[in-house]
Length: 581
Image (tube, rainbow, N blue to C red):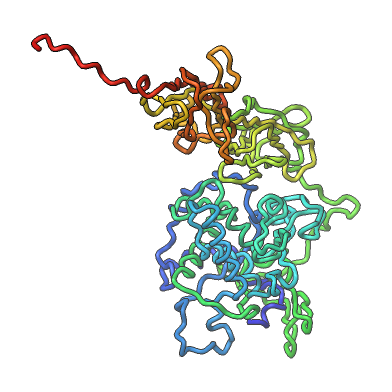
């Protein structure tokens, strides 16, 4: 239990191979999810269908412990086991559980089509950090001590050079996964959220991290109630089939039930996919400083040999190097990554970016990464960021998307969706992990428009002097045959067909004070493209008058109004002569 917090992540525990064997073996056990998640489904999932960096975690190591065989809801009469693990195996620390449920509630409102279950966040949180190291968080949800993965220096892990100048992970050479949900800094830079309303986006805060993880899993219009989309989302978090199956085990386990336990009383998992290599130790309690590989008090230091058995049998004993290492004066060089070779970005044939407010852009941004010699570079992450004060977003509602270049060195950004704010929008393409000049694209959002206006009825619009028109004018706006909703319009009682200025006599509208007005502005069509004008009134002037309605986009309609005395406006039919009379 708590005694596990201060020790180094267990070395010599299950290796990646052992974990994989254990996952497979679980399918034959009685554990929750014993019917395997379906490796065929996992194998068919496409992690490339993602707009993220390679993964949220940079494919950092994770805990490989499987769910316990016992029920996730222990009997109330069953007390904790002597080891102190009992109910804590199934329980989730109170603050951590609250963060998961609040994130689910937030996503239910902002992205209802995602169908994010809090149990998925719990499953990922368990695998990534053992539920924030058993719930070692303060009252605001911030972890007591940073949770850091190993530095991603390419030595047994991915190579991700520093992207945040050490701001999140304290490492100005390489990135490290940070916090209870293990985001790498380059992903947190765009995926980070403020989940506890303190005005900060802190990857070490479980409320912020859980909400960020929820949004990350809900991008790309994924519906997590669909198994294929769920697989894609989990794989985008950590691109590993073993990871996918392990998260699914914990997801099914938590779906069968769990309960709240006090913060700080959860158990820390024992096994990691990297066997603990390179991972930072858990922060110790103040009374027991943690020293790597130090034996517990009262025990002797274990001898270096014999070593634990290998999964296939036999033992391993460290051997002294038979050949001297490379001279210290000439350290071995690391081969350049594709990212290291990028010299500049070029536009890859992006068409003019224009869309009406509220519509999706038909064109997409294409950017090519090139070397100094102009050769295209594949497998480079390009980040597209929408700048400035605009409500235009990428499909899915995000303002940042990261896409890897294809074999031609080209990254195609997700489709843009125009907001309601019109004008120019700047989208900047940059290379993740390398400082080269960004490439800016300008997208233009135009106001909603209509190209056709038509009355919805054909009743004559007539009135007696000083009276009120019985029928109100209603029109429908369309654009290229489709309903034109939210289109701005004006209505003016004009002097003549050749003189569009407002008339000073004849029919009129009334303002809020009941005064006569003959021009209405600020009108908009509704969701069905309809616009119903206020009631019209007539002064004492008789005759035929014109009402002109104009919309953004150039649609125009002129309507005739007639003001005449009662006998003229509604003449009685003359009795016909009866030749037989």
